[in-house]
Length: 217
Image 1 (cartoon, helix red, strand yellow):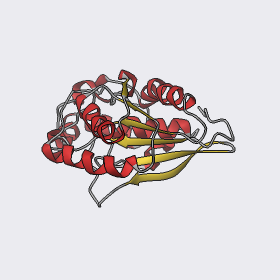
Image 2 (spheres, rainbow, N blue to C red):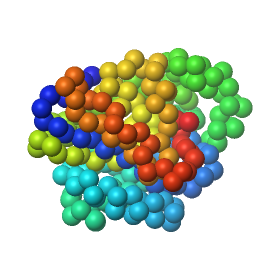
Image 3 (cartoon, rainbow, N blue to C red):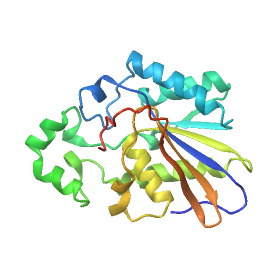
Image 4 (tube, rainbow, N blue to C red):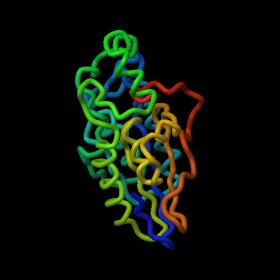
């Protein structure tokens, strides 16, 4: 999917939420509604000040609390409202949700290995990565299409959803999405509008550096 139209010079900033307790525990969150830690709030506040310098004109966020609270920090700095959309939630991963990575490997080792090989896997009986892109990418493109020329949209979402959305918007085959790597908490990627569509300008920007602690690593 490639929704850019040449000449409008729009940008999309895809910003991952701040730290949660489950991130620290290496526990698979998926669509479970986990809130930010105090450090996660501080991360969002620091990053919001940086992102405000890009002068965004719109913010859209997952309605899960960790993303909504992160978006709220940017809204507070910029004065913008936030549009919430369930289409930007993290991948639903069924029986994997709430388990640590070690528990997942112990109970679902073959499934985990197949996913890492790039096979189409319903992790824990949940969504395929392509299904996540099917629901999230149109949300992002719809809000991007509403931007004025030269406008910047900030999308506040989750590591796996951001990675699959970037892959879809760049027109990459799903097998290659893993090559984008994960995002650290409260880091972001930037897509810019080129003559042939969206292109990746920055990936995992804002790293301090911090390790990637998330569902898609």
